Image (tube, rainbow, N blue to C red):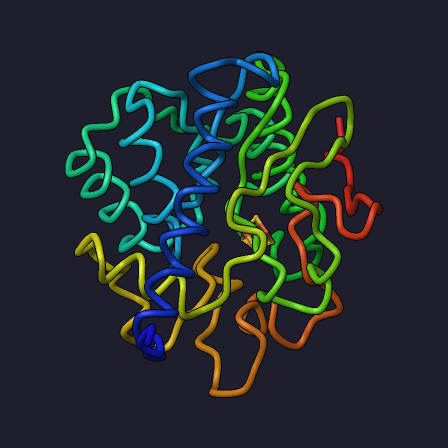
Length: 242
Ligand code: SF4
């Protein structure tokens, strides 16, 4: 008689299947070029090591765009260097805001207090838009379980004239944790302090048990995304003053 699979065996099989599926999509994008020129966009945040590690298994010289808003935690900058070296990634591109635009619009670094949408446009959206000019497709680490606003995300989307690939879109917390454990990946140092989604220092706080992972982003404000992503077909975007 066939033995009953244990809970542990089933969850391992589930992780293996999800992992295989994500790797195949990355191969299509980065090795076979099925979506044109493609890059990974990574925040080097709480879960970023998963996709970055997969990239190192598929094509370690693939372009990785790291948006450094100049408002990130020091821990994120150090984690970026650690993962890049550990995984042998050879084309991590640090994308920074235009210095002249920052001087004109946010010389004291306080725009995030009065007008966070403009701050995100200045420090994230505009620099990333410019960097993406060279690409037809980009890969993100977004997942449906992260927040209600991400519940309808698709594996492959088309937005703003580009293909957007979300290889981990159906992954839940157990698969993410399982991948970290299976491949012995280092955690972002702030994860141990209760940060579950990590963006800029002034706009990120720890989350409590039972909260959405992204509840700590722009806490207390009517804002849930930085403007880089489409959510449910709608782009949240603002522009930078000329
Ligand atoms: S997350 Fe905050 S500090 Fe970072 S770009 Fe957006 S508003 Fe500015």
